[in-house]
Image 1: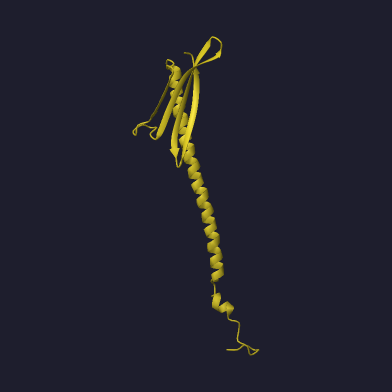
Image 2 (image 1 turned 45 degrees about the vertical axis):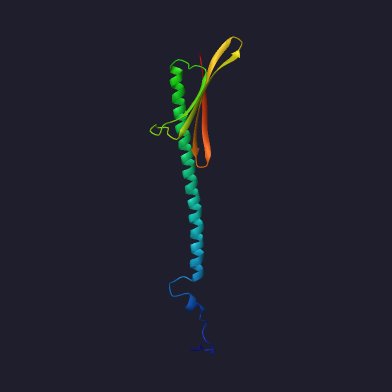
Length: 139
């Protein structure tokens, strides 16, 4: 079928753009934008989960360590020693290891104080995290 000039009509719009539809190029661009958006969203979500896990592990270590040091502060000062161990599987701190070092220090001549340092360590992913705190007690 020819138009008024005797030429065949231009078929591009009819072949590649159906009435009310999208071209293949528009669909591909939309899918590319969607893929990039979903990738960014996935990375943000996984980063948030990693930070949340790391923060929870640190808060758990801080609370337990401070409670242990407060318990030692209320009781008698422990003897000078170095102790370490791992929490059993049924303990609230399972997966953590602990180390307690008790030393005597003499900040001024004739003044002796006992220093208790408590450290908790745990594995997160491929790295080992740790939290250390301490307190000074009268011997």
